[in-house]
Length: 254
Image (cartoon, rainbow, N blue to C red):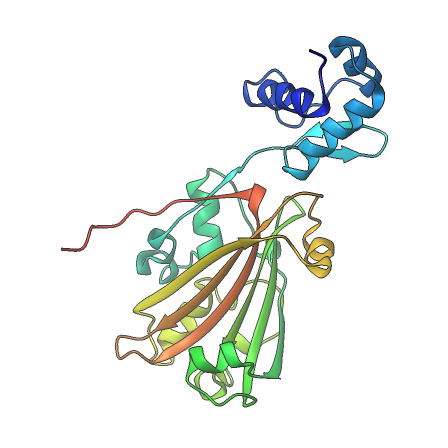
């Protein structure tokens, strides 16, 4: 029985998973693969297209078909928000970097602040009316100058007016980030709800995050509350799926 493109894709997939073609190496040229497997070039192209759609490889101009690196960064769960971190100057994305043995600096994060009208989702999370004015703080986070994720946070004006959270300078609001600022405002974060889902990226996300073909994003929705259940931040994050693994440690409820 001859080799079809599905069988060839399966063989190449297995070779990638077994390390025959390690991350960031280039697959043999398509003509070489055709000779090795006894198929025509069109079959090779279709097989490589399957792997590209699965996010296993990326076509790079003048280089060839490159095997994608798997998640390099451990994204902590509840530990990334520990008060012992942000109260002493370590923001969440930096806590992830340190847990992964990777460095970071203030300029790894851009920052854009503006007042916007609350959409239905933001209004419900913050307990305000739809269309009411809220502060939006949008950040693009990079590692080694490569985008990894975006995070856009929303705040009630009376909570953050005149604080470093609404200053437009690049980097974190303070060494301890927005949570440290909220604490100084008498709004210390106490608990939060995080919800995740995966989807394919929008054209704008593909451009902003430089997402290769076939890679999904992981979408985070996070609402942070004080001990008195006052919502002090609602955030949306868009993460390149290939850049993170997600790790949670917790005590089982009774």
